[in-house]
Length: 433
Image 1 (cartoon, rainbow, N blue to C red):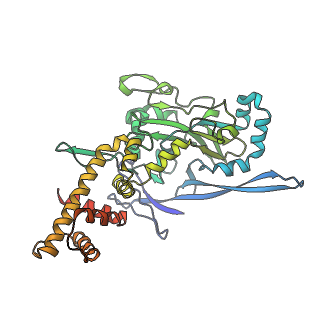
Image 2 (image 1 turned 90 degrees about the vertical axis):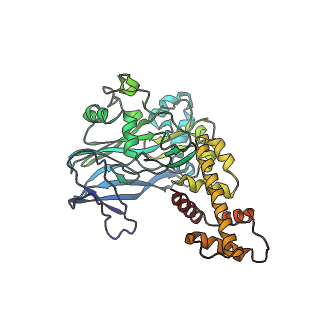
Image 3 (image 1 turned 60 degrees about the vertical axis):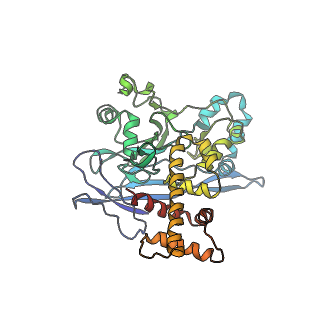
């Protein structure tokens, strides 16, 4: 259980609300916003055990236990006001616990579309970050939650930089998840005046937001929000509704003004709904015969798994998952894989060129500092502690050699922990400003 403190606000949205998670779980994190008027909320992550009956050849029915995580936001009274969809389980677990439904679909494969509607719900896999739009009945206004942050005033991957002097980059203001969500739904005016009036306070709307400022595998040209899950949270009525099973689009009367085009919200090129897959058996999809990524949900158990193509998995493995792209650069540099990374993610090429120059500059700095300290012995020239630490380590490493070279320094740096390497380079970069 993670406890956080949420500020009370007079106006919506929480545009400057910084949520701090409490890693120690011993006291709530505190938000500094110029007021002490706070209320205690709880973000509760639970592991749900689901027992699925399995037929046994000996005539006895066994129970196969499968688990998934569920994140829930509780208000100060302990009432649930936002629940995220259940997480995906593995293919093997899904097949094992749903073998009866899969076999039924195979047996009656002449009517795949009808069986999909009764047994499984299969949609395209939408890349992005999950954003839950919910009504806060305690504060009496709508809000969003993503990545366990209420208000969305956070970001995960640093991707936005500003170039100056032609090819040198500095950090620029990074889009927060709140900013990305606003961009995806058409802006603040559309959100307040058209989207919210169509929302039911007893429903949590779960979107997958894909934004150019938060690329995962592919970089979108525009921000999109895909409605993938709706959830009723009335007391005593906690039910899930996948979008494909909703008869009426709750936002089909809304209009957005992207690129000055006034079109139906459901037809807007910046907003989409997940495409439903009906022409493939679930067994065939999980066996690799479907050429695209997709999400499979059992309608009986509401358990989900995701099928990712081998090509996508390889790209995901190559992409890494660190929020600082410079950290990824050094990780790749250690295994000589920067070129492979850039071929898959070409939009990072200019940043990687910049990181390479910073790396070469730091090697030059250590080379000069080493010669000054150990060859020319001029102690009056001062350097940062990290520089002294590294040149001392290099000196101990090569004390049997007569001459220091830049290639020796480069080899030494690549043997260092990536976090230490990142800290030293960031310190060097900011010291030049």
